[in-house]
Amino acid sequence: MIAPMKDARLAELVRAIQQGKLSRNRHFEAFKDPLVQEARSIHLRLQTLTRMLEQHAAHELEVEAVRETDQFRVHVRVSRLHLSWTARFNAVEFGLLLEQRPARFYLGHAADASRPS
Image 1 (cartoon, rainbow, N blue to C red):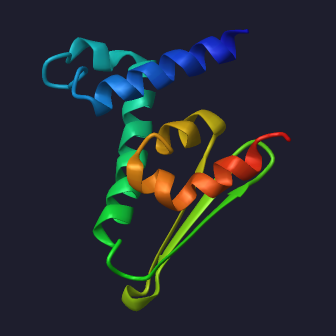
Image 2: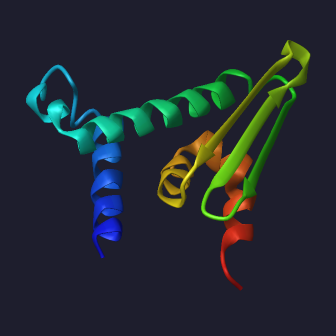
């Protein structure tokens, strides 16, 4: 039962970082904690993908999310710019990603398809 508790705490930390409630400048000591460092790393990955979706929304985006055994593979391609990016997220990270409006718009179908019927 440690993993679900860790996942919940990690998600809470990522949200705090996203909302500016846990900044590295004001909470320098907290960022020495490996769990907080992991949350920051996740935040940066999610932020990168979200910004990519926002910045290239005017271009023709091809976005695909595929549920693999224990993770989601997200592939983004902007053909006109010859830009391609692939990332893998576990279920918790993918859930956090879907909390962001651009990701929910492009990837919400993958979340729906992954739910058991």
